[in-house]
Picture 1 (cartoon, rainbow, N blue to C red):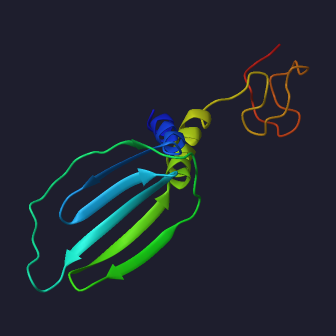
Picture 2 (cartoon, one colour; picture 1 turned 180 degrees about the vertical axis):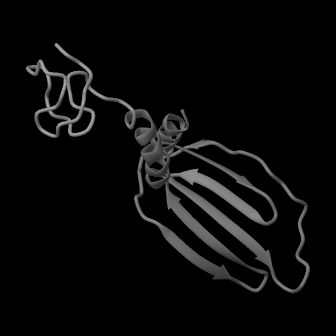
Length: 137
């Protein structure tokens, strides 16, 4: 379910952008990428009232595929920007899902050890590897 949700967010982010911001964190999903910016204040106090909200907006459709890591600074603050493409997150969530769904499945008529086709075998043992199949046709 998580994989499907991430896939929908990834494809939807080609047209829609959404972001949230506080005084020390900015998160945005757009153009198929998740952007996380960690804002650290300079030695002087430039505190602001924290504001956090979502602002979805329509954009020209586009998907970007690259990873990025950048450090930015000015006289008021410095920040670290991490951009992760959502296809990588979908892939990371999808591989365990695929493995969990297909690891225990066997096709009927095949040897459970070597996957030899046993449909024409009448002995109950695999002629390829000798494993007992228990199925006598």
